[in-house]
Every structure is written in structure tokens, then in C-alpha cells.
Length: 506
Ligand SMILES: Cc1cc2nc3c(=O)[nH]c(=O)nc-3n(C[C@H](O)[C@H](O)[C@H](O)COP(=O)(O)OP(=O)(O)OC[C@H]3O[C@@H](n4cnc5c(N)ncnc54)[C@H](O)[C@@H]3O)c2cc1C
Picture (cartoon, protein in one colour):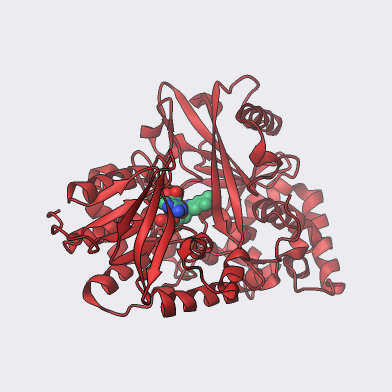
């Protein structure tokens, strides 16, 4: 990459956050010869797509598949990392419930075998009963699914996992999400779809069955991007949090960064690209936004996430990339097997399992000591019989606040209020990315919003980044709507149900 042009004070673009969107913005700016200063609050790049390393073990926050239909993003991935750093990985995942593994996406034969004759008959009876006496209220996920599948299948494949992910009873989750994702689906169609070979789904099938993955995890991409950005003459300031954005005369003019010691530095800016949570962005703008906008920002909420990574002998493990844990007797929601993601992430005949807990920042699990979480993870793994007693050698904990922007009642209006105020009062502040826009953007769309914003900055074009569509139908969970796992879509962070407002902090 060529060098950025020398700048005079005030010409720099300040980029807040060194996750996929922020580093993409800095990278694209550099390609246009524009210098940027990237501020990253943490001591690691990659944001939610980071790959933390502990004692030589690398693992993801969740597991990050690289797939996209956005050609410029696909091209950029391969521009940042050479082809030899990408692996094409086969995908295998199953659902664990009641001591059994169900293929995911569900297959009728496998599901029937696992349920057993008696349970299968009971499921059919329960389905017939639900057809005769459908739940009166079908506005919730529970009512909607029960009406179409019956209570027993609902409890096996829908209830527990979704409750773990979203932290609210399924009877409080709005039905329109389910209705949209698995519309026109009935049990009979599900069975037919599961039995018949897939039609017209070549492209989609390939996305389901394999995915790209950097050898050393997604963090490898962002570590490389940061190096390239710095190599081109831009700055990446780690452990520097944006704490204030000064505005005057209808524009943002400077960003104040604070390091870990509390020392502040003021950086004049021609534009600000922000990937920090949009709720926090509003709070740091000075002079402050009107009360209505501040209230809208305060009203946005999040679901948080923690990973307990446990090292076990490879022989004590399983072949899946990940397993959905529907079993209600444990709190973990999913387990990643990083050895199945990349052989480069494991060593010495051992593998690293990432147990995922969906939490609220500040709740009991979030506040538990690391040793207690490791002990809990070990106990739960053993209780499920997924690894033998004493197999766990060592464990690590990573907490990830604001992993999921929550779509609750009124969130869209709140985002709209914020967005309109920003556009009117500080049009040179560009919110992009996932929490930056309070959207279920995966890496590809997070990056794409950054790419479009950079074009707006550099060429004066008028791309509407808010029209980048996160709900594109190519994604696997839609195409495999025949499976109950359609409602397990939190797996990739894309698409989410509308939840009730947070009534009580756990
Ligand atoms: C469990 C899970 C699984 C996922 N799986 C996939 C997948 O398979 N494939 C995929 O493509 N995507 C996946 N995603 C989504 C992906 O992680 C995000 O789309 C992506 O990381 C968003 O990038 P971003 O740059 O917008 O934000 P982030 O990744 O959130 O990065 C924002 C950065 O800004 C920094 N920051 C925040 N506030 C400040 C401040 N005030 N000053 C300075 N820095 C600040 C943060 O520390 C962070 O580094 C998954 C997400 C989750 C939660």
C-alpha cells in the first residue's frame, strides 16, 4: 500500500475503534492517501472479531465464519490476507438435547431416531393437539411455534436455546421474527423438506457446508490490517478511549482520547468515523445533544457474552465446529471446538473448547471469578458427558460486553432519533459497523458500511449506509428454515428477534 499524504492539523480522519469496521475505514482511507488516527480503547485489535491468545492458545469470541455476498468485502479480505492464510473449512454442527446429538440442520431420519418411537409419537400427538387447540396468543415466539409444531417439539428445539441467548422467556419474544424467518412453514413441510433433496439451493448449500477462515482466527485479519494501516503512515493508538467529541459550527472538530493513565490528548479531525456503540457516541458529544436524543441513546440495550475456553486432549473432544446446547440443565448455550475451526489454533495433541454463556453485564455470571467460571464450565462439560472426568487441563475466561445490540420495542425509533440528529448537527460524524449503528451486522456488513462511508468522505458521494441490508436472504438459517434451528440464528450474530424492554437488571 502506498503512503498517506502528509497532513496539516485538522486534516486527519479520526476513527473510533480498531474492530473490523474501524480498521476497514482506516485501510480504505489510506488507499485514498488519507491519513487517519485510529483510537482503540482495548489492548487488542479486532473488536468482537478478535482472537485472544492465552498461553499460546488462540480462540474466538464465538466462532467467526467468513462468508459474504458483498464482492468488495470478499475482495478486501483477500487483499488484506494472502490466499495461503485462508482455510476453507467443512462445517459440522449439531444440537445437543436430552443426552443426544441432533444433526443441524435437522434431518427427519436422524431426528426420529434420536427422539425414539415413543417420543416421536408423543410429538405427533402434541402437534395434533396444538392444531385442535392452538394457543390463543400467537403474538409471541412460544405461541407461534407451538401452533405450528406442538408443545413437545417447541420445548426440544426452540425454547431453551432462544431463552439462553436472549435472556427472556420465549413467551416474551415477539413472534414476527419467527414468522419472518420460517414463514409458511408447518411440521408437514418441515418433514418433506428434510426428506427431499434440496432444490435450487446450490449456492446456499455451499455456504452451509463450508466457510473461509483465517489460519489463526479472525483476529489474524485485523492484526494484519492494523500493521498495513500503520505501515502506510496512519496511526493506531491502543488503550486510547475516545471520551469527548467537540463540535462547533455544525461539525465535529476534534476528538479527545484518554489513555489508561487518564492522560488526555486532543486530536483535531476533518471527519470522525465511529464504531463505538452509538448510545455511547451520543454521550461523548460536547456540547451535549438535546434531552430527547440523550434519552433515546440511554434507551438502547445490549446482550453480553462470555467465553470459557478449556483445554482438553484432542481425543476427548468431538468433530463438530460447534454444538448448540439446548439442554436446559446447563447454562452454556453453545460450545466451539477450535481444533475443528483450524488445526493451526491447537497444539500438542490437545484442543481448545470455547463454552459460550449469554449474559448481561453485571449479572451473577458476569461478576463471577474466572476460577469459578472455569469450574462451572468443567462441571457442565462433564455433566453433559461431552468430555470425560478430569479431561480439562486449564481454562481461560474472556468477557465481551455489548456482543449483541438488542432489538427491543422502540429501538428502531430510538436509533432513528439519534441518526437524524447526527445527520443534522454533526454530519461529519459517520456511525458505522455493528454497535456503531445498533444493527445485527456481521463482519461483512460492518466493513461494507465503513467502505461506503469512506467513499462519502473522500469522493463526496452520498451512499446511504443505513440501507446496507443485514437481513439478506442468503444466510443459512433462512435457507434451512425447514429446521427448527432456524431460530438458533444467534449463531452468527445476524438477525434477531424483537424483545421486550429490559424490565429488571439481573
Ligand atoms: C457470538 C458472535 C458470533 C459472531 N459470528 C460471526 C461470524 O461467524 N461471522 C461474521 O462475519 N461475524 C460474526 N459476528 C459479528 C462480528 O463480530 C461483528 O460484525 C464485528 O466484529 C463488528 O465490527 P465493528 O468494527 O463494527 O465493531 P466491534 O467488533 O464491536 O469493534 C468495535 C471496537 O471499538 C472499540 N471501542 C468501543 N468504544 C470505544 C471508544 N470510546 N474509544 C475507542 N475505542 C472504542 C472496541 O474496543 C472495539 O475494539 C459475531 C458476533 C458475535 C457476538
